[in-house]
Image (cartoon, rainbow, N blue to C red; front, side, top):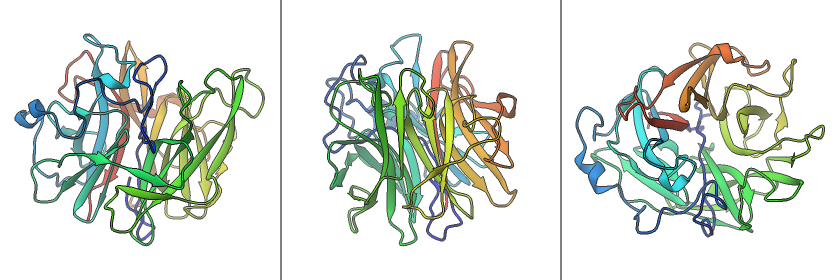
Length: 354
């Protein structure tokens, strides 16, 4: 989620759900991603206990670090982490993309967040909601709903950037209201997945968007492993490397990369010489291009020793596969101060500049 106003900044982040009417199911069996919060939970504002937790494990001041980071976490020792209703979104700051300071105490309700800064406002997207943190305030304001005009059905896994006119642009995957995991075919043997985009309506401060014409990517998901298909597809992540727009798409624990010369163009898959995957070392990826070093940063989350951790690879190209040995763990539940029993997942990074 790095602004693209001058086409030299990049956005990154793997985010999850937003839909025009929200998720219709509240069970983990039928709603794997982007589900509404558990009954009785108010997701429109930070948790009161979070607001009180401002000690060394979580600060509450507007961040001044070079980068912003968001992720969700869950205590696998006490709850079912397979259910998004049990996830909590956390924010962190970092100057190097490796060492993080948690900003959000106990976190806020939500799953698979996306974060981006525009001017003096940080925007954090969670399922069907947007939360804003304005420079000069000590914590985010209460969240509010988001809307997409012209969209038939739902829109899951939003990933944000900023276009040349300063508007927020959401990338995501179209999804209907049929119960089931949007990443799969919901009982069918094969299906088509459309990755689409929507551009912010002027004056709505990130709360309303209009669907852009055409699809950015269309691909086929199939359970039989047929050539040219994928076992699943979800969680797009859009960023710019100074010459082209790059879109990561997640397929479970693997990731593919796609590219276009224009933000709202048709994206073509980058076929790595030794296979079609950018990496097989993790999914729900986010990417950033560091112009100073001319290197890419790719973050993924992956299960390791029974828990989910976030890893990063620094690499010269996205035209060759990133091997597992290139990734280093940069965040675990213990390292970010939550505890050894916590999963940390769905990384999202943004440059923290006005």
